[in-house]
Length: 231
Image 1 (cartoon, rainbow, N blue to C red):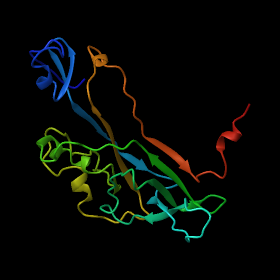
Image 2 (image 1 turned 120 degrees about the vertical axis):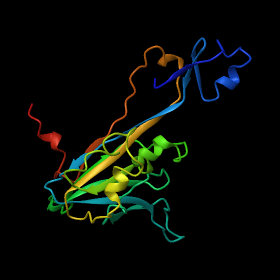
Image 3 (image 1 turned 90 degrees about the vertical axis):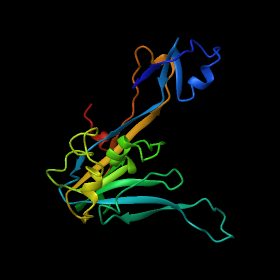
Image 4 (image 1 turned 30 degrees about the horizontal axis):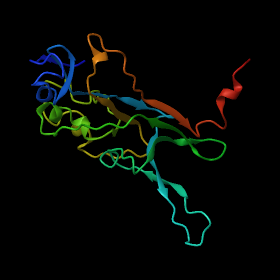
């Protein structure tokens, strides 16, 4: 629970409850759990089968068929090699699915595919205006994923501290020079989080909430490596 505040209502039966609970939930008599967000930005130094990597969006697109074709439900994977830091800024959309993949520039599996890892994480996005001072400082919220060229001193998504940083520090500043990111050392910056609508079960001790970022091998091996686990 991020924040609570005192109200006049003891329950929803009180006359002022509807108004007082517009931006939260009554979690105890005279106490409102306020709606809020949790956002986390991660820095992942991607070294997939070596230092030289490329970020590839594998877009899933429908494939138009002749009108007399027996099946119309066909789709294909469209490979998009991302060439620059600004082009790499990714806002995930349900109606435009894509696999976010980091491929080796030097290694291939037996089938000839570049050895790769797919970055998987839940989609989320801020609901409030980005004019809010906190959100301006947290510039990483503009995108679900940023990809930058590796630099030793680029360590924090927002500069040294969110609440004390200047507007534009962190990832917006790192990507401003729009460096090339093909066949080089890359850093991925995924953002995860959730919109927290409080509930009675969150008070007085909130239970665990689990979200995760997964790095999944994609054509990195020649077959399922679990088949080689000894008995």
